Every structure is written in C-alpha cells, then in structure tokens.
Image (tube, rainbow, N blue to C red):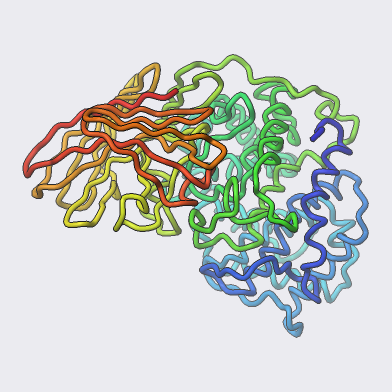
Length: 561
C-alpha cells in the first residue's frame, strides 16, 4: 500500500467506505452490517453506523473532495433520521444516551463542510436536525470524554449562528474537561480515572479540533490545548513500535487505527511536537500494519475485534458500525494537496529512551529492538463494559505478544491469564479485580491488590533487560494453588510453537517470539481459541505454587526472546 499523496489517502478512505453502500437502509439513516446486540437500542446502533463514516467523509469534503453519492447518502440520512414522522427516525434521547456520541460526527460536518452537509437541507429539515441535536443540551452526558460531544454540538450551533447555541453550557463543559487534567499533557477519562486511548483519540483529538476552529473566540484556551498536545506527544510516542504497531492496552481497541488520530489532529491544527515527517511516519506505518491484519470480513467490512473478528474481546457498546470511528485518523484530508504533510517522506521514530516513566499515565514503557512493553499500575476496574480486568489489570502489555481476555473462570484454559497471578480455590479461578494502591519505582512498581476481599497481595514488579521479575507477598485465609503466568505465545498452525515445562520453569516459543517463566513447577496452558486479541491461538507458560493459609512470599522471573 502506497500512502504518500492526498490521492493515496483518498484511495484508502474509499477502499474502507465503498463496501458499505449496499447495506444502507432505505432511508439512508443507517448501515446494517451485523445482527449482534449492544447495550443501547437498535435505533441508536443504526444512528451509530450512519455517523461513523462521517469522521472520514467530513475532512474529505472539507478538503475539496467531491463524492456526490456519499453526499446524497449523508443528506438523506439526516433527513430521515431527524424527522419524527419518518419510520427511520433515530429516536428521542435519554440521559447518557449513545446518540450523543454520534451527534459529534454530525456537528463535525456542520463545522467544517456546511456547504455539503448543512446548506443543502431545507429550512424544515434544518429545524428537524437542530431540534434533534439540541437534545444533548437538555440531558446528562457521561462525565468523561463524552462532554466533548456536547461541546462539538454547541460549537456547530455557534458557527452556524443557530439560536440553540448555549454559551453557558459550552463554558461549563470546557471547565469540566479541565478538571480531568492530571499533568504532562495527560487527562484521565472522567470519573472512572482511566488513562488509555481515550486520551489521545478522544480528549486530545477533540481539544485540537476545538483549538483549530475557536481560536478567534477563545484564544487562551486554544493556546493551552495546543501546549498540552505538544507535551502529551512527548510520552504518547512511546506507545508505538518502530514498525508502526501500537500498544494494545485498555478498552475500545476495536477502533483500531484511531490509535494515530491524535497525530492527524496535530498535523491539521499545525501543532508540531515532532517533524511532519516523523508524525506522518507514525500514521503511515500504523495504517500499513492494520492493512496486514484480518480486520475486514469477506465483504471488506470492518469487523468488531482487533487483529481479527472477535466478539469475545468486545465491549458491550461495540455495535457493528462502531469500528468506523477509526476514520478520525483521516482528519488531515482537510489540508490542501500541496501541504507539507502530503509532500513529506514518512520518517522513522526519533531516538527514544529504552526505559521511560510516564507518571501521569501510571505506566513505565520499555523498548527492546523496536518493540514496546508497558508495565502498568492498573488502577481502573470499576466500569463493567466488557473484559475490563484483562484490559487494564495485567502486569505487562506488549506490541509483540498482545494480551488475552477471558471466557470463564472455571477452567484455566478459558481464563487465559497471561501476565497475571491467579488463584484456584475449590475449582474456581480468581484474578486481580481490585486495586488498593501502588508506588512507581525507577524500574517497576509496587502494587497492592486483591483477588477478592479475603486475599490480599502486594506485588513488586522489577523490570530487567530481558523481561521482569515479580515478588508477590500473599495474605490468604485459604490453602490454594497459585499460577504466575508469562506472555501469551502465538500458536497458530503456521507459527511452529514449541512448549517445554519442568520442575522449575515453563517455556514456549515460536518462529518469532518466546517466553520463559521460572520459579516453580512449570506447565503450559493451551489458551482457549480467540482469547488473544492479536493471535487466534496462543499458549501461555506458567509456574505453579501451593499457597498455605497465612502469609506467603513467592518469586517469579519472566524472560522474553
């Protein structure tokens, strides 16, 4: 895949969205791509599948692109989706409604390409759309990055001089976003407190879009947003491997190449924490890696999953249209074809530290041979939206190995607990599910946690040149078996995986990676298929300890190759 000129990126956009055409509803208010359910209603899912392609189409139109068929589709969708008398009406909103998420993409169009997606509507159609969007000003939104969805709607109202604009709500929302700022360019994503991809592809992305269009009205805040973006970029760049792979960590990984949307927003807003070539390199290599994956189905439709279709790892809010949020990465299509971005060569990453502490993100990054391994404090677990424990509470996350999610806690193979310490009590497996505090060290963490109220653990993670050590101090009222687990190793037919286990170790390796765990009696788990987010079959080397009532200290070493 060649990604250099603006025309190359046009080709990428339409390669992704053209296959959607046969699946639009009669009124064009949605794209029916699947039948699985989410925790919101079908009308909201239909609204989502309509809005997500706008993240790519809006910058295309704003940058001078012409696509009459997609313009008609968008306008027809606005007409049918916001007309209460139409059978495809998107519906009335409640507090914290999924429809608020989708309003942001529509507001994006009103802000940047009104000539394509607003002006052609009749006065009645504009009134319908305004009334439908205005619902966001009379309901609660989630106290998180969602606040920016309402910001976008009010910015659109302001710029289009629509009376529904509320200056008071806009100011209150922007002040609330500031409450989430924790320093170093990092925010936490609202009251849940997680620091994950919602910082770069949501809060930072939206901040830069705001700075781009509101400088005339809110100069100081826009300047602050740009400064924070520059500071943020200096540590976020550590999440990317030399080959373009991004760190798989946290929720909403099905948005895939949205991982680099932050750098696209920087380029669009003329914010340069690095050279244009370096940022282009990050974007291009990431997109190329995604195109080497199995993210599309046989009809070239983006699927829910990560490197392959996978509902096992999905959140409750991942509808069939959700993955098209990744098109936010094409924000730079608004730029002129002669812009420096389209002329610049994709440059490699600059020289980066081999070990990088990111205190604002509760994370230490180790870079080895261009690969990324993140050691995390794991402070986020109180949000039940699907597989939160494996997405945040492992000891390490890696671009090389990915991570596994769980199918059940009845069988070790279904628990698939890579990079976790788990316990078996009377045939049921327990993993870390609550954090009680942590301390960041120069070369690791001390993490205090519990598997449930009666089992308390203090784990010291010590980062080493070839992996890491774990020292666990366990306090338990039960006799039980503990399993300390290493990285998951790809074991598909073509990977040629080989496994070994002995009295003091377990080892698994394949043609391109390996992991050895030492410290006690070893075994290798054949993880349940489709539990790893990168490889559909994996094995996990583990060591087994017998834990007695009272306090026990165990030590494990994990080495990578």
